[in-house]
Length: 335
Image (tube, rainbow, N blue to C red; front, side, top):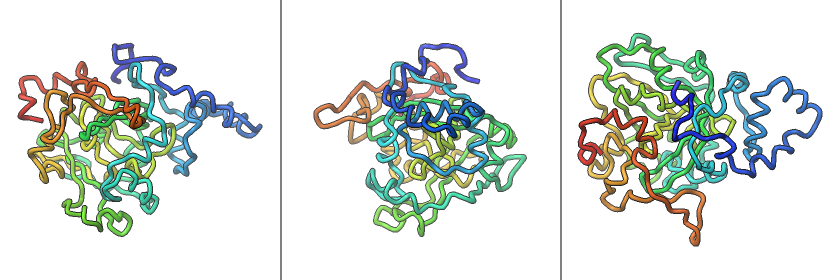
């Protein structure tokens, strides 16, 4: 698996985890019952102690079982503090729940995520409808701490829990005719109030896509959790894509369809405003959005007097890993 040995982008977990998370671990160590459970379940104990500020969640039994064997810190980032959980879960773009950053956290509790089926179709040997448990059953959960860069020029650092997209694709056995992977988000207006507002000018359902070699890259992740717990609804429960070298809108949420296709899929934002949002959407400080520069970003959390602005890194800091995918391409044209 990628980044099992030290690289320039790696660091120790003590370098990336906020000190407050460690200082609060005693809350989770109180009580004899927890002490006994922690002795038998070291992975869960580790998760609880590292993310002591994270609110509890009701996760399906199969998720808790996989959490016990999770590979913590499988991929990390260097000299970067993890974004506090409240910021990561209350400052989101998920327009199905509304256009404001706080709308997903306000409204996403209405979303029913169990049961959940993902349709797999197209140029693939194993089409069908799969539960989340079925999709991830053969893979161990990995914690991957990735930078997340929004096209709006703000950023976070998120500890995701998920499985390699490449491993999932290999299990589904796409044919040689599959050149792209198309992803589709749930469209359920009765539970997603943003679809019933003026912002519903979006042609739902939300669609994104990757070239096959991008999808098969070891950094591409299917996330089902974050911060040591099951994925919150506002962050894309029960499963979402995470492609850390691309702008955040490529990392589609609440996936209900994965299609293997021959032609480049028509994606939502590219279809709405192709002069602003290209298919590739690679983080590139040298290519400005038509209405703002991408050369700098605002790392959350921040404030009016301490905005925490920093230079944007090429491919969001993953240039060493992914630049070869675009060798010979004009990245100003293929933005």
